[in-house]
Image 1 (cartoon, one colour):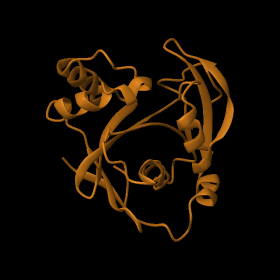
Image 2: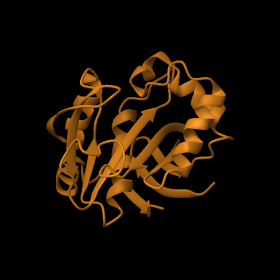
Image 3: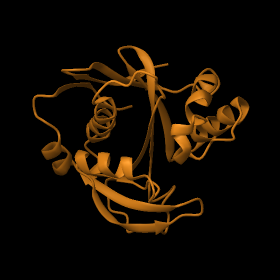
Image 4: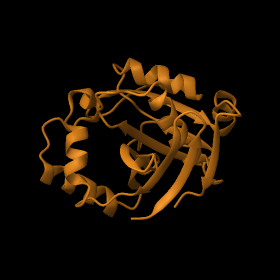
Length: 196
């Protein structure tokens, strides 16, 4: 499993993304995606075999992939990227060249670290924008997920509108490279590496 990106947060330390192994990582991911705090991930009833099957399906998809996020070398979050013009949002919005879609999920913990989720979204966005072909990051969280809407706004996302997906009504939002740079404190992090 290959590390594809690392980023150092001056307060919380090193974050990294590595390729995800659908079979080897399934048991761990199962505990994350079925946790009550992951209700918006829509996998509450999945069993470990179903989680492995879902992430094998993602690994085989030509326009969607998943990565395991590490904090200080230990698994701590999940990140997915996709082509919103070919997956997830086909026919639901006006795609622009350089659009990339993103999902992320933080692992449940009994001892949350202040600023951790903000550092995770910052890491995922820094990774996506490290690819010069990516000009906008597109997200479509559930309209009821107010916590992630606030987090997205703090990271530089602008709301485009609501879109009706089969599984949810989603708040379509986009973040440009410039908006992310303006939202990210210049002294907070050092980025290292490049996306896969």
